[in-house]
Length: 258
Length: 261
Image 1: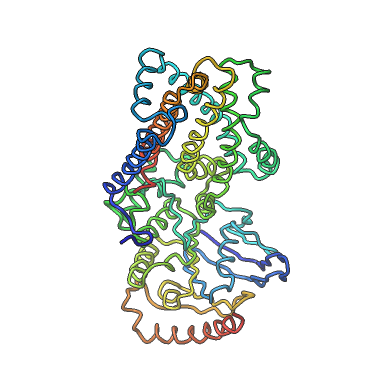
Image 2 (image 1 turned 60 degrees about the horizontal axis):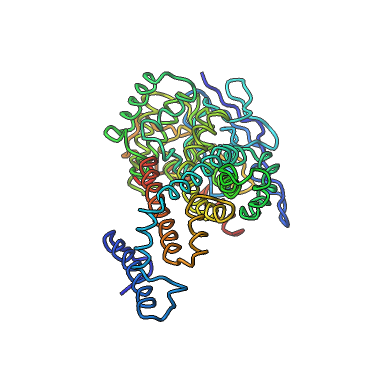
């Protein structure tokens, strides 16, 4: 019997999570090996693995993976460096928020992919252009979410700090920042996931390396096995980075879990 | 020597859409002498917390002023320590770091901070818990830490806003004894807000009774019970007769609130 909000053990959780992957591959194998879907449109799991092995061994796909990771991380770190301090300032000081927030909200809805033609014009098709796509896609999101998080700091904690003699600097450095830090880390984890979708789009156009570039190449050759392998690699990297980020956050903020 | 003067302090909260302005406090006069333990007793919504927040500098009076040792209060400061009803320990700091927070803000050296904090950890009976996170503490322990945190700053006056209001009855009684023990030993000027009649008598040297909204001082009753007080004092005829008197005072006010509610 499943009852609302009943917890599961961590072992059960892992088993259920794995079961879905197994089910997914099973349905895929059934559809392709069973001949229900044409090979032209969808490669079967074994072909995909073969193609993937070939990509890695003879086509230097590891280099593409490295390039993509570098672009994501580079653009994301740039966005973080700019966005987090700005978000903290906006969350802490309402006039700054009033000044910036409407524009940032507007900019947030500008799709990063729509900037690609412009960015190619401005920055060429080199690495800078790729980084800028990630940057534009991430920076406004982070700013807004950090602003909200900092602005939502518990007022009673701020008041307690004031009655203990804290000044404005003390409030920001020793109340607003530590109290928002875990949530800011969660925001970064979330946005890093989004950054992955932008990088592939950026690499689909005007690129000579990266997972996205490989996918476009394979499309020209109708090699669906390679395309799927590329997609799965992205998913796996996402899963791993998410796990690392979570573990890092838990290590960074033990008081949250205590 | 500490002297707190509340001089014609009134507070009206501005009108919000479709509502008239709320008069929370009628002009209030109150003097608190050095090492006095004054309890402010009143029904919920009588403005007693507002008054305390004004003394703390967290709220501004609409008119009148608060004067502490000849200086007008214009904002919060370390000279007025406050303990809140809600649990306001900093969750990312350990018990010891919480207690040392104010010292750190005031630039006390790390070695001195540790020494002072450890002294207060001992005094509120939290030895062995100094490295715990607030989340790992019971409500009573959290409030003890909060009291220690306020006292560690050595404020001129300690302001307590129903600090034991969220605790169960047994814990509350123990906390009252602990606080009173600290006051009897160290002497401190204290302003303590509560809606609990027994608490107001047991702790206070004077009980200020406030009326229902708009809040004003309805009565002031001296509590001439000897110190040190133990919980046994609560069954003495003197205590009981004070309680009877305050029950009548408060009941009249609570009825007014109930009618409006």
